[in-house]
Amino acid sequence: MHILLIEDNRIEIMKMKRAISFLKLDHTIIEAVNGEEALLYLKKQSRLPDIILLDLNMPKISGI
Image (cartoon, rainbow, N blue to C red; front, side, top):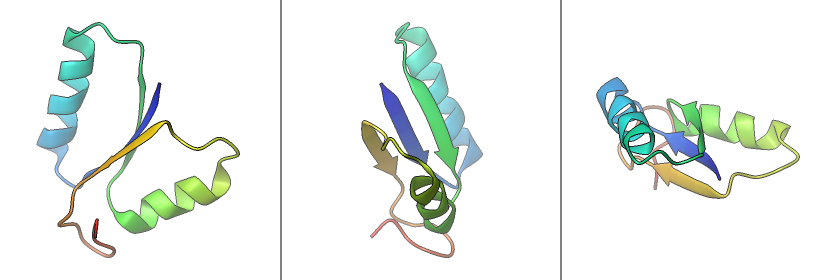
């Protein structure tokens, strides 16, 4: 599964990666630190992520 994680807090990103690793899941996590970076990533990809997890309170473009 390809996961796009949009999060500006490094600690939250580390917690997500640790949880995926602990559960021994074969998922790929793509990181974006804000909504603007995520949109640029999505525009370049021919295949969309299977799931997008995002923070609501972020700089530049919020999760809302």
